[in-house]
Length: 499
Image (cartoon, rainbow, N blue to C red):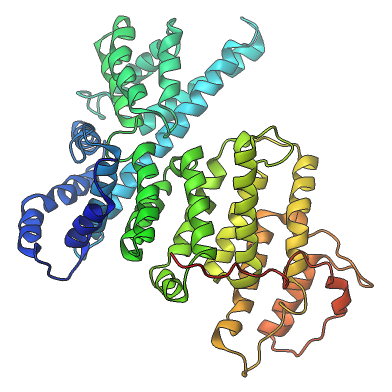
């Protein structure tokens, strides 16, 4: 949004390439001048709260507000994130990358714990005052607040060896839990999700100290530290991830798969602790469009480059992780009141994922595709009854299992076949194993034919006898029983159109 894609590609090649360029000397000087800063900052995460809580608070502040300034545009921050993460993966900096992941994992756990506490508090407030149910619910909420405290900053200035430290923390938590100002908890609820906006973060920093002032200085300091550690800063947030995906698409369209993979790797790294960052409507739509393009609209030369940099594998991995965090209203497809665009995105994604499972996906892509399909069928945000879940699982995965256990697919390849054809059986077995993990009710459902073994049992029988024991087994079913194979062999890829 602030410069041309060619400029971005040139900057990334100069900073992320081992080859010398015309600006090589300048890049080396910049690396020597500034490149060590992220490494040293993240290496300091080694010092835990038990050692130095004030240092940990400063680390959060530097990471969120200094490494990538919030005044930069989202595009600039996405490029900066790609350069920093690439630098942290270089030889000798592995510990810094590991501690960076640990820091964001702690933030993710804190956000989830805070969300659970706020939900429990609302539930307790909804009970009849003075009732046994209210006392039980309030005790449960307090227990969840203690979990929040264990993941957040301890009370600064109080030694852990001090006998009064536990009592002091307990009194702080009690005052916080019984606060009359409902806006305190409403503000915290806005930053308990990683997809909150920068304005929500700013509001929390501005409002919480004012609203908790009556609880005492220690409570104010603890609440400020909670907001600091919970909220997403400028280093990584939903805007930077959204622009990483856009830049990955634009880099691919500019025939630069290497840079495209750098941006996708950023997304993959950051959605490990925060899967919801790539599950916003705009990001998910862009990912699905990107997957469709790289699967249908590429030349043979471009396809080789896609395989070299693992673009399809990266996209499928991101989709598998992020789909689990999508709102229920965005994943259901027809019949859920979604708009036409959402239904179209869902159908396109489903079609591409099924092709990766049944036709030409690698083992990792097939496994990722099954996990993504499972998340679309049973999103975390949608709490279904057991009968409803079983019904949805069987509807989605029984046709896929039927196609996967067809004799044409579930067979040991002979030596005359090409290596790519030989590897298909591994992809099929990977997809079947993923279905067993994600959709056990469909995996154990009864099959068809004269010997109605369940679909999963046929796959297990093949794996034990043909793969492990090397027996030359023949299927009890005829090929005709698979004539309704859902688009298995009849699916044809779109002709290459180039890019």
